Amino acid sequence: MKVTKYLPILAVCLMTTGCNSKKEAVLTSGIDLANLDTTAMPGTSFYQYACGGWVKDHPLTDEYSRFGTFDMLRENSREQLKALIAELAAKKDNAPGSAAQKVGDLYNIAMDSVKLNQEGVAPIKAELAAIDALKDKGEIYAYIAESQKKGIRPYFTMFVSADDMNSSMNIVQTYQGGIGMGQRDYYLENDEQTKNIRNKYQEHIAKMFQLAGYDEATAQKAVKAVMNIETRLAKAARSQVELRDPHANYNKMDRATLKKNFPTFDWDTYFTVSGLKDLNEVNVGQPAAMKEVADVINTVSLDDQKLYLQWGLIDAAASYLSDDFEAQNFDFYSRTMSGKKEMQPRWKRSVSTVDGVLGEVVGQMYVEKYFPAAAKERMVTLVKNLQTSLGERIKGLEWMSEPTKEKALEKLATFHVKIGYPDKWKDYSALEIKDDSYWANIERANEWDYNEMIAKAGKPVDKDEWLMTPQTVNAYYNPTTNEICFPAAILQPPFFDMNADDAMNYGAIGVVIGHEMTHGFDDQGRQYDKDGNLKDWWTEEDAKKFEERAQVMVNFFDSIEVAPG
Image (tube, rainbow, N blue to C red; front, side):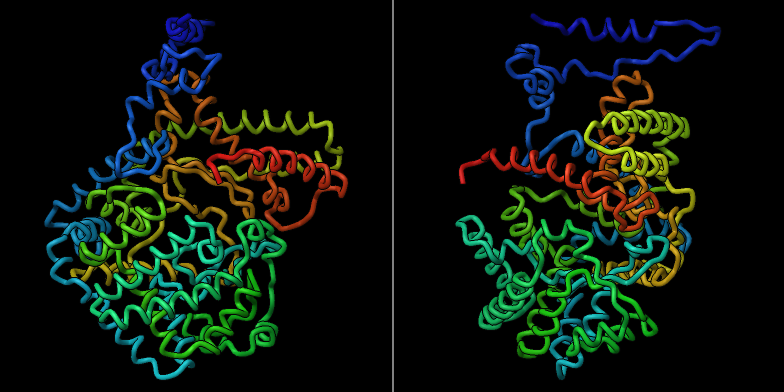
């Protein structure tokens, strides 16, 4: 039996129920009936019934390895950003140093494939030579610090964020890293698929070195050096499961303890060059990984470490060099590792770069054109109602004691809600976009980001700062500020529709809101209190009951074999 005609009738009923003296806007159901497959029986395959029409109308293209409503909305957003950015790029009279000049010029530089192909590897030649000129291992520490400023992260990552145990203050943190394939398992597992990816990675390294002008013998030396160092770092790294334990990854120490625990690492040089000369406290996220970093620098030959550092530079710069570098980069990271068959067109990649470098400049333009104030007001109401609903769910939990419920409700009530866009925009006046190489501009942008980050070290956390731009199709929960954030770009159809009935919005963006709220009470979020501090507010018995219930879910999904093997 087909039920397609019931939906619009129901919508009319919802829209006409009740009267008042004020004329109300007529809302739609927000449901596109073309997305249904009414030839399918809901009781047999509800997914096909509900989504079959949409899947048929949106076949998977070679540009994607998966495609859903998030991807569709990102495509729409990117088209909107392209129009905004291209308009500035077409102007010849943008004032030097203005936001318009920076947006327009960076886009034009990114789009200029002729110039990029003429330059080839030239934009990174001097930096490759500088690595080759390192005289001893002592100079490696200064290089690490300088390269991190430019967005290259050899050996490990360093950043500034809230102190988990004192969430009102920022602290410098180190985090495991330095491996090109990102996940430790790619280096350690020995199933056929992983071994194939590992072999492809080695081929990729060799090809990239040859594109950079090195002979085949040097390229093969680089492969061995890189794989040796990265495999050592991977073995010392924590697993994804271990990284989910915030207590295990909180290891704050003062400078004296840092030097005592990692005596061969030249912290004084590293911090001085990093712009953190007077730093006294650091959270070393994964001590075993940092110990291995120190051991690698101390024991691996200088020549091998130079090749590793050169690989880090080539890898970081590849997307901003000539087409042959981009094509090879795509072949491994997107085709081999992600299953994509076709690179995005240059305009999409260029829009993404401008968006990443000048995010809040682009965000201001986006909000002015695509996000009315009324949308923010309506979202506030939706969030408040869902907070109330989640509160009722918490109150009704039979297994949770009253003291823990009270703390949970306090945390829920103190959520800091961010909707649409920030009240204060970033100032990009210190960032220069020049008519030199694409890579040089990316390095300056990374250094601008770095300087902004470093300035926060040891300072109070700015709870009004956004961790996403308004044009980002996503949302987040941040445990150290106990905030949920919904950028303007996700508050668009089909997730949020100002012209649709509340029922549709609760079923669409309501899912996203609820998802982010529950992060405050999941296996990680529940370990942070209402003020964002890593502090146990659960009774021992309630924590045990939570873990028992979570394990039921783990066991259920562990029993499902998605694909053979």
